[in-house]
Image (cartoon, rainbow, N blue to C red; front, side):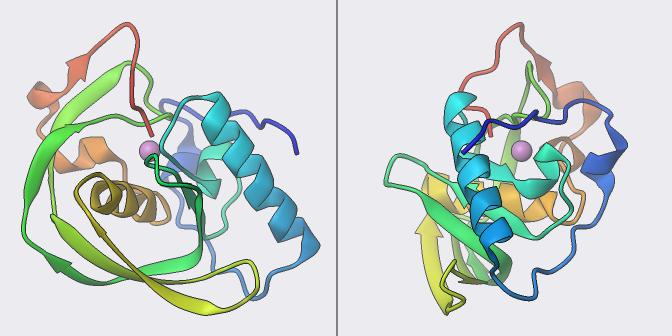
Amino acid sequence: MSIRIIRTGSDPVLREVSKPVPQVTKAIEKLLDDMAETMYHADGVGLAAVQIGILKRLVVIDVGQGRIELINPVILEKRGSQRAFEGCLSLPGMRAEVTRAQWVKVRAMNRKGETFELEGTDLLARALQHEIDHLDGILFIDHVRPEDIVYETEGKNAR
Ligand code: NI
């Protein structure tokens, strides 16, 4: 495994739409491992492949309940609403209160190539929505007004 460089700020790759992964290869498995290592090293709770400059629909998440890997994730259902501060490893020092669904159901493929469904509430629901947004070039700042962005010298709980 190796730690990759996280793309930040106005890097145009962050605005690109990532492509579906047709099948899980050794290279995809290595990429998922690198993404997890990069996420843990940066103290994040989620990372999308685009954040390390790779336009594939891959996400890793760990909100403290173990590592979740999502290949080609899609949100099937959303319910409710929650509002909380959010950050992003690609936008260091920036935070904002973002309204998200309280509960989501996601369908994705795992590294065995099997389709599975996952339900998440609270922080996991937030992380799922945030990371899946990344796959379409959407950042959390797109969900708030510019004047609601808080600039900090150091971000915590970023993803
Ligand atoms: Ni992010």
